[in-house]
Length: 274
Image (cartoon, rainbow, N blue to C red; front, side, top):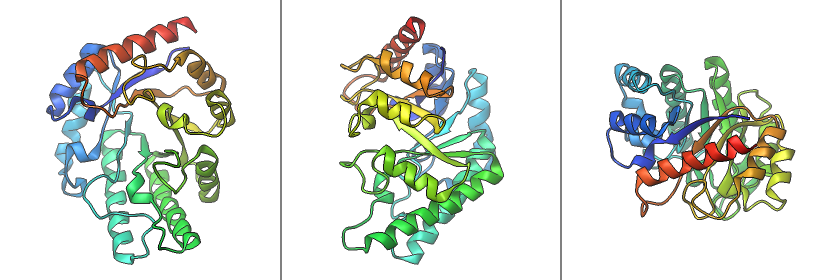
């Protein structure tokens, strides 16, 4: 089975978007995944023509814009679980603008990670904060439904967040919202914190996965660590996943070009083998 391969924009550091696209295309990727904070400190101030230019620039290099991630990283001060109504409204305002930017850019998946902006502070009554998070996602999902966009809610692991940390917890939130616009995103590194074996966890998410991030537990790209992707990709195929596989890494001590080249070569090799 073949999946379409993308790479996340921030891997290329501070390069202008044109240069990011040029490099992604040169390495053979079919898509580049956007990070709003790398485009603008606050996308609410992004002119429509700037969004159009992102889409046109990617297309000029033969690339699609399949997803956005790190959604709430900038500006600071956002939270979906905060008891402060002003904070929640500011966050909702940003989310509404984000959905419109995504729709204009042709993005179809919003990967909802943003652990700091969804965490529940221990001083807050947990049940109330949890419900505020669910309510936020419900509102955002309704906006996405109208624009033909899907949120991929990302279980990040208990060491990273306390709201929807595991796949089971994430799916419980998704079930509470009960919108076709809120589904599941999986990340290889985060999957290694799950209580069940990786392949079993993927199989249990059959029909729910809308996006997948490829990396390694060493926070570099696929093929750059010890993880064997053959059972991973077989499990994704068995779970009916046919969307994008997007390379996302978290280290800057290895050159972007090396990450991009080694990751795509390895993924293509594994895909050819299965």
